[in-house]
Length: 255
Image (tube, rainbow, N blue to C red; front, side, top):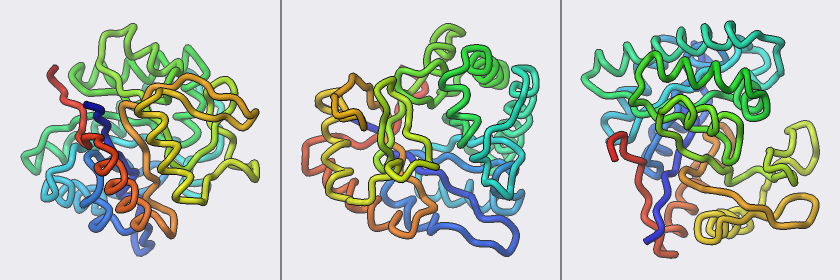
């Protein structure tokens, strides 16, 4: 049987600014990545989102990013591997505290935005990210772009990894995501998106923007929670995959 995790980036509100429909999307996903206050979120939002995730029995992960609220963590920053390690540990620790205080167990870590994309290509940065996860809790799962340096770094240091694919993003020949600044970066047709996801899960292939299919591994599928159609799409992909005979479940920490 085919099996896949559906994850979503949540807890991205900040103060009086509300983003997404977290309480509703939680009903259609099996793991969540909660912003840790640098690119989005704040202590109260983190606390509330952890409570919601536990209530819905969804696996909880930290979503650390660059300290860039204005740019939503999606702008590249020049950081050393040591700095990347420090900001990872700091943010993982913050969410870890809320999860433990509520009687839960943290499941995974998924870097956000520019940090995620940079670590996907930069070996030294990827190793710093993996080391931070390992040092905080070696039983945490590292979510990273399928085929990326992050996945390789996690495997090298000895932590469990989950190769991630994106339902609403297009790919390049090297397996990286098309940069958001390009007009063809996003997939807006939901029917096209779900068919692509099914192909990635069952056939381990995806059509890239250069017109050729490339190999890909799909342990977990990201559904962005900040788009206007996020809730509708989360419901659609959940139903479609189940009808296609695919089990939707979070990866186990102990296997």
